[in-house]
Length: 244
Length: 245
Image: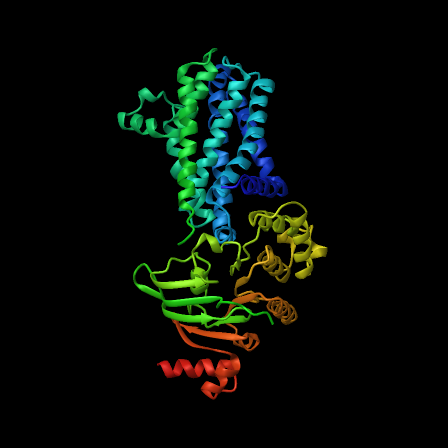
């Protein structure tokens, strides 16, 4: 692995995004816009909104980054650029980590904007404070990036990649504890939720929203989310084969 | 003409099977010289791309061996000594021409002033200097093809593997590319290209006629016509296919 090539890859991905203003707008505007809409959906019940909004900050960045990353890396596989790169003196990790770095930078900006809108404009109270809130959103976005990199290997077209959203993300969304507390769900769903990474992202945001101090549970949730992201990155690099 | 110490490519009993059933290449034994334009000629599905992918190390070989510049085809030692232009454009359409060249040059380990000089030289070589700041997806088909070829010229590779480099180009642009190929070979490079267009075969120094995963003939266009008694490479090809059946 070469730091120069990794950084060049990250820089290239950011340049591509820079030329694609619409995608950038979607990445930065959609999560805070959705949270804002939710505020007015729960106009008659502001307490429900205050409860849900921080949790959504652990979900929306993950979903958006999953979509963008999976399609961006799938394009590399289908338009021949990955084929060309794999015949060059480029390490697979240069490619994967370069992507992860680029999308982490995007995720950071996205997290700052989303958390800023939620805490500043919408006046949602988060007991854990601003910095942990931003870190929670960032961890969720990183998780989405890593899972998107991994899952893109199993899609042959952009159409299929989009289908991974309901197949891969929705089950996690339904069982993560957003709609119903996990211990109220059927036992087998609880077990499933225990292995789904989104569960820990939402748990982390719950901890941040409703606890003033940084607990060991919160540390555990962050460690698990980042561990899932790391495993997905490693698995993602394994799906890139020098020889087919 | 520069002298080369070893053949550019040597394969022995090279066989590729897909899913253990379909034979894409069968017992390919070739020794191809360096410093020439070598054409892999044959219809679509003949095995040309599979052979190129074996030589650039992307395709697993089921049986036999392939060496490029005296080194095992899939060896890491070879990376950077050759370039590969795939059938699809294999450049980033949402980057400018210069950004594409800059990225791929970085992947070849170039940096600083040497990288800038290399990019300027390649832009000049493929006649894309005026379009350097334009996004690739805003260029014409021929210009995109030149960008893709330009990426293959970065890093001063000894061998260029070009898969159908002239497909879909107008005759004038094809002529320009062939002039460029000749210049590159005169400067000591080896060009291996594939084509299903028989009239391009005459422009190659060395030909490999491929069909159904088998090499039907390996000769220069002139030798091929003498061997078969046909007037053109296309007629030679048809004669060889009939002789096989």
